[in-house]
Length: 187
Length: 199
Image (cartoon, rainbow over all chains, first blue to last red; front, side, top):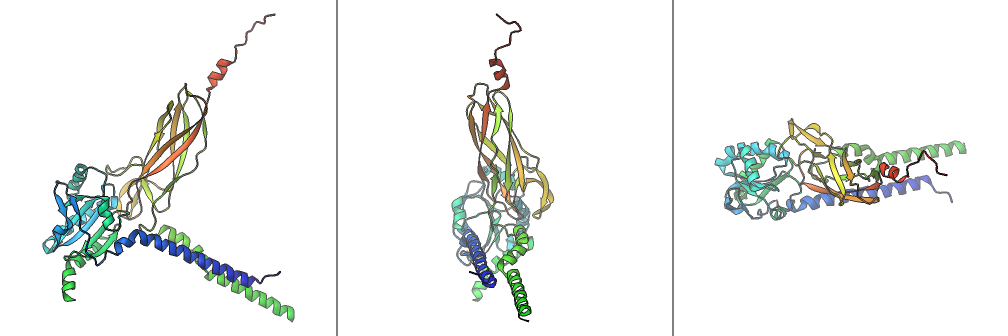
């Protein structure tokens, strides 16, 4: 039986379309399953947590309610995190008087002493908390670092950023978080 | 006339086929695949390190033997070398549990490649990327029974891409060696040839 080559080609294209779209859908599902938990947080109240600070005090996220919070998950072994830290120090100085509070959460296997030494070396001027995986899970899982959440004065997540971004992008997000209360009041 | 018409029809079919293939997702993906492999966003994939199945190396007991392990890091990722330049970085390390009477004499790591990355353009990091070998020098003790032995361990590494770092991971490693009697032992068992013959 002789088959028309055009039909064969059309069948091959249909199969390849199905394959490619199937693969793309699977990829999309994978990436949204790793980050989807966090995207659900946007516009929602940031999950509250209670963690030990480097000086042994217990700090709750809700302690900062009324302030815009830049919640940065980092680790001593994370080079890109080291790049951001001096920016956070500067931005805390610049926007602190307007109500910004940078909070670092070290997702590290290093001891609090080592984390403290590292933070001191980086001249960190904001609270650094010793992280727990359960807190990362509350935020949809932290598959890689740095991961930063911007929380408005009303305690709602304004935005989240994974990986290192530019200082100007961080500053824009801080401004968004600081302006959150105004936007909500205008509605 | 009929033949010319048939030829024209075949030619147009061929053109349609070529055109359809070029526009098909396979055509697109074939064109775009090389670019997308490098430019994926952080976190869209997870880093992986794999090991090529190692050859079984024969080693005489009482003597050192070298086993070459070949590792591959997924493209777009790098891991710190065994001697990272910065103190807080996690070094790549192979930790092995050898059976009793098999000594791991040393693990030889390659030098890292000094590279700078977009997140720290002025800083050089000592990293491995792509394929890298680790040499393991093994010495079976003289008393060990000649046979095959499996050596297990873990490769500890911490990977990053161009904008983010992933938590430290472990990769299970195992390889086999075949322990042989030493050449000297064979000689010892051969009875010495007497220059004199006894009649």
